Length: 120
Image (cartoon, rainbow, N blue to C red; front, top):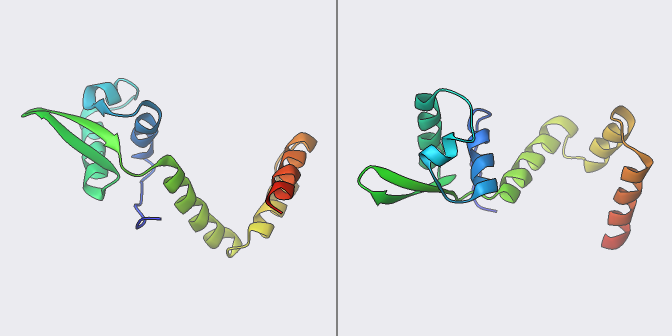
């Protein structure tokens, strides 16, 4: 995986729009979001500065934005950090906690077992 790009909670809705919609102009992005336009522009520029989003110039005042950081890379880095921080890196501890504390159905557990059996 590439170097870790930290996405702030406030920036995540913009990334979600880009992951779902692909390449968009800023007005197209903002049409999917609620909030102050000026703040959203600032958040978008931060994402460009971090290297999470690419800005391609259309003309002197317009750009098209596309995600550089993929959704899967983001999920992988967040999962890894969460696992390390909360469960000392133990996937077993995490899964046991989720099974014990969350409402996981027998069907969900069976799907997990199926995935485990496929990987063996």
